[in-house]
Length: 89
Image 1 (cartoon, one colour):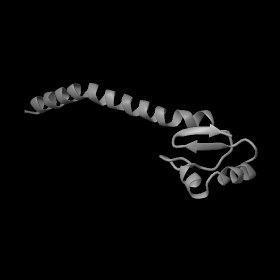
Image 2 (image 1 turned 135 degrees about the vertical axis):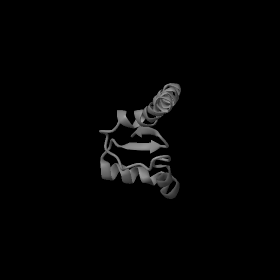
Image 3 (image 1 turned 90 degrees about the vertical axis):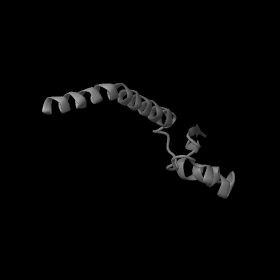
Image 4 (image 1 turned 180 degrees about the vertical axis):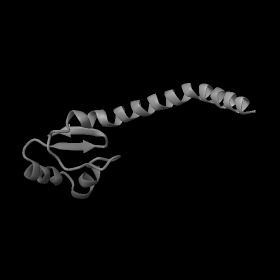
């Protein structure tokens, strides 16, 4: 009986392994897609961005004057995120 249960579990694991590996690969690719733009400009100074929207709420609330405020705080070159896309000003 134990051997039969062991064989069933082993069969289940072998049949699910390709699906599991494909899921992990897709998850990793999605994370690279999300973080690659940020990773390239991570050393450029700028305020922390909110994950899905970046700095768009600041722009909506304060208008283009927020760019002057960021330049005053972070210097003439700073990072600004439109969603997940970073822009260096």
